[in-house]
Amino acid sequence: MTVTTHAAHDPTAPAIDGRAAWRAADTATGKGVLTGVRVLDLSRVLAGPYTAQILADHGAEVIKVEAPTGDETRGWGPPFLESGASSAYYASLNHSKDNISLDLRTDAGREILAHLLAGADIVIENFKAGTMARWGFDYETLLSEQHPQMIYCRITGFGVDGPMGGLPGYDAVLQSFGGLMSINGYPDGNPLRVGIPIVDIVAANMAVSGILLAMLERGRSGLGQLVDITLLDSVVSILHPHASNWMVGGKVPQRTGDFHPTVAPYQVFRAANGDFFVSAANNRQFRSLAETLGLPGLADDPRFADNSDRYAHREELVAMLGERIAQYSREDLGRRLEEAGVPASPVHTVAEALQSAQVRHRGLFIDDDDYRGIGVPIALGRSPRRRPRPAVPLGSDTTAVLAAMGYGTDRIEELRGAGIFGHP
Image (cartoon, rainbow, N blue to C red):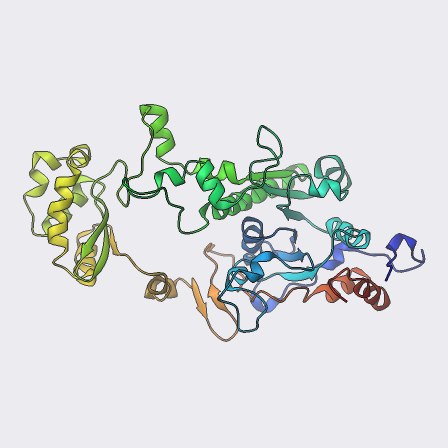
C-alpha cells in the first residue's frame, strides 16, 4: 500500500498541531516541578530512556517514540512482565511515558516526527551520529533555527567529532576504554566490569543535570541549546581518586579488590554468618572500632596511629580485625558499630536491600496493585514527586497521540495500513 504525506493532502484539512500531541498528564500520579514540560524521547536501551524517565518522575510529559520492532531491551529477559509487554529491564527504564511506534525510515513517519519535534520543549536522542541529519533533522543547522527554544540532548559513546567521533558506545566498552575496568577487581585477578551499567547510569544523570542547566539558562535568554553528553566523558569524570592520584603521584592505579586505594580499614570482612563491610576513615572511628571489637590498645599502636600508618600496615591490621569480626554475627556487629558511630553494614543482597525497613520508609520500593518497581529517589521539600505508572506496550498511545495532534481517523488508518506504525 502506498501512503501519501500530509503535504499531498487536501490543503483544507485540519492543521496538525505538534504541541497538542502531549495530552494532559495523569493527575492521579501527581504533578511535580516539571509539569507542562514536553519531552520527546527518541532514545533506546539505557542512558537516554533513563534520562527521560527521571524527568517524567518530576512531572514532565514524555512521549517515547520506538521503531515498529521496539526498543531491543523489551526482549532483554527473562524475567518478563506478566503482561508479556516487555522485559523487567525495559520496564524499569520506561515508566510514566506515553508510547508511540513510528517507522522513521519512511517519509510519512518522518513527517509525524517533524510535528512532534515542533511541539517538544526537550528532545533526547542517542542515535548513531549523523542519523538525525540524514533524516533531515540536524540540530545545529536546522532544528536550532526552526525551534530556537528547543533543548536538544544528544547522548553518544565518544562524541560526534575527534579521532573517535561517531563510533558507537556501549557501557562495558566504555568501562574498558575509559580505565574503569582496569581498577575494578582483585590484584591477582582479571579486570572486572562493574556489576551495573554504571557508565550509562552516570551519563543519564549528567544528561538530566545538563537539561536542567539549559532550562535555567533558557529562562534568561529565551533560547534552547545543545546538551552534549558522551559515555566517554561520563566514565572519565568518575575516576576518583585514581585519576588525581596518577596526576599527582605518577603511579598507574591498580586493582585493589574490595579495599580502598588510600584508606584502611575500608573493606569487606567475613562475619560469622556472612560478609560485612567496615569503614574507619578517621582516627576517632578507628578507635571506636578497636574498642568495640575488644582491642582497646590497637589505636595506640604506632603502626596504626593514623590512616597513613594503618594503610602501610594494612595486611597486619586486616588480619587482626578479621579474626575478631569473624566471631560476631552480621546483625550483632552491625548494631554494636552503629551505636559506636562506626560506618559499617552487612553486605546485603538486592532482595535484602529492597526489603529493608529504611528503603521501604523512603518509598524506594513500591509494591502494590498498580505498580511494582523502584520509586523516585530525588525528594524535594515542597514539590511532590510523581507516582510512577507502569511502562506500556509498544505503540499503546499511537492513535491517541496522533488524534490529539489533529490527525483524522481515516488518515490514521491509512498510515496504519501502510505499516508506518508496524505491521498492518
